[in-house]
Length: 314
Image 1: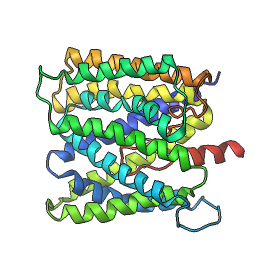
Image 2 (image 1 turned 120 degrees about the vertical axis):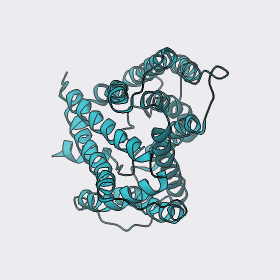
Image 3 (image 1 turned 90 degrees about the vertical axis):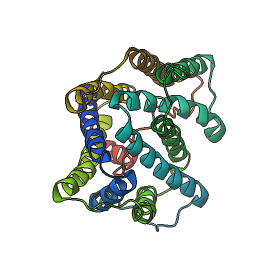
């Protein structure tokens, strides 16, 4: 068993966690629309760099226009929700709620992909949802728009991934990468005009750093999936909770309370069990969680799978 990919993945998610720290830092001064707009602007050259390697013939008209539209809208909402949640909630709490994404993917895979989900994965989903309730602890703490944003990030991130799983083989990589970027640029640029604050050079550099870190993390994640099986790489995403605890404490003065620790533990164990069940085959024909390789909650997010496949064909 080659575990090299696990080390690459740990490095990738450390980079992504740093990416989220910069979002949180800037989110204290600027609306998420403005941060997303400028990080999207800085992302265009990086995306063009990725697409130069795409030699497949074709055009930019989607094969599945409606699914492409739904995915584009979902990706845009996912990014906005993530940026807002990181801006207003403790890092560890945001990750705990976003870690519910595999649970939502499992549920959505039934109507969208026709996936068969057996008793074991349903039990894991129910346990994970209980973990979400433990983190939120309704009645004991005030539920805010930030909590709704984190949960929305989990839902729309899952929906985005499921749509890619459904149409990804037939749509060009350029279509699936460019449409969300263009939508972010146009929509966020329009909405930003109502919230705009001038960006000093240092903060503008911070926005550029968000794009660079998102791109770098994605490239390292490609190396991870090329080196090892998805069942080894995918669980490494949960290492982000460790970085969230460290960064949150030393940079933002955040502490992690016991309900967040317990709830996050339940959610993580549920996600790991779903990965384990999919890796064994059985009822899962599509393995939707294992094949979700891209990190959606970033303005600089691109599809990992096509570049992994190209690397393995060489």
